[in-house]
Image (cartoon, rainbow, N blue to C red; front, side, top):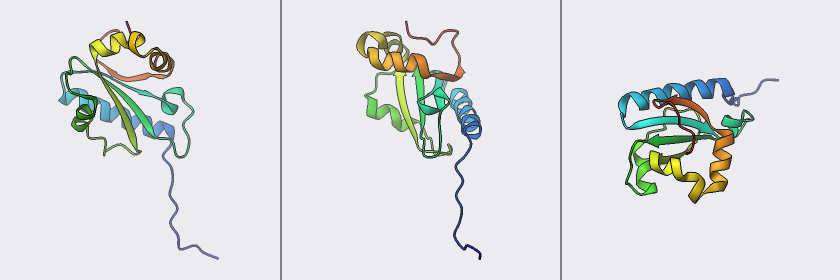
Length: 124
């Protein structure tokens, strides 16, 4: 018996992270104001599986745009999975524990930095 249906394969975590690293480096090379790119969520914790999306954190030197405007700049179509972005200015990132301590705690545990042009990207 043969099947005429196609078989879809979910990319391995290693492949997803490697493609995310390449994407992050390209973004850093093209955007001098991009200080860091990190992965968080299931890929940051190392427990991603079939159906997991890719969660990325971008830290910009400065950013005065509203949250919804910040996302337009970043083309995630080269990445192998659906991707969610958090985009913060460095000042927002440094003060995150004051205005969103729960998120700061989660990101503090989960983020794995893919690209960083600064020596310390941890929250202030």
